Amino acid sequence: MDNQQQQQCRLALQALKAQLNDEIVSLQQSAQPVILDQQAVGRVSRGDALQQQNMALANLAQCRLRLHEVLHSEQKFDQAEYGYCEGCDKVINLSRLLARPDSRYCLDCQSASEQ
Ligand SMILES: [Zn+2]
Image (cartoon, rainbow, N blue to C red):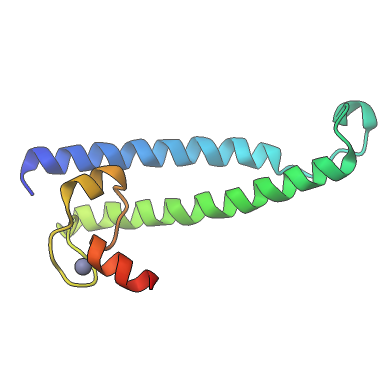
């Protein structure tokens, strides 16, 4: 990977991190305990509100996991290991990295682990 490609991946990683942080902040608001006050809940029933809260909590857990992956990838940058598959040590395809900058594995290793 040349410097320009590294820079592209770094930017994609930063953008993903910012996006996840934003999402976490707004999900934390949605995951606040359900307010019993009917007026505050408005036309949404308490059941719906609870369901939304549970969904927000599930999404929040997902976002936190993904953020963990992003931080892991940032460390790989610092150790000059970014872009290499953690399974087979081969270079991960650039288009894959740009689409998913927190990829740990190349496509081959990823699909092998999913089978
Ligand atoms: Zn691999």
